[in-house]
Image 1 (tube, rainbow, N blue to C red):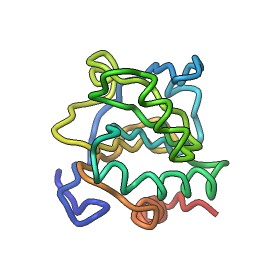
Image 2: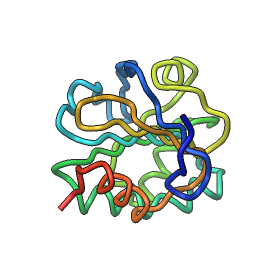
Image 3: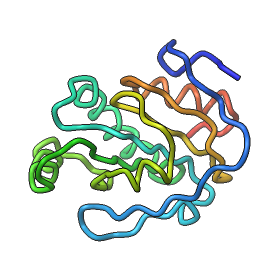
Length: 153
């Protein structure tokens, strides 16, 4: 079923069980969907060269800062030549959420990517509830969560 997206684009509201993911971030920490039980989880596929990806980073940083108890953001860097480039970019952009170095295995665990950025959202019960292709904003994510009765305070 298609619904309006966070930005007025087509957002697919997903039904059925979500695949559990198991990602390792650039610092070697493991991130499993089961480890975030009780929190919203936003998984954002992005690239350092992608203008809309870069545009949404400040809002993803703000979401992480403003909602530490009920929202986790995980960035998955795609289409990079050298992992050191990604790590240096994340540091220079003051990214405060974990960054995993993505590949086909990471994508297969979460869902299809038709463009960057692509964002998947899991509800606090661990069910994948929505995805969005294109940049999104802090306000749009907060509105979506509020509309589903799980607004972050």
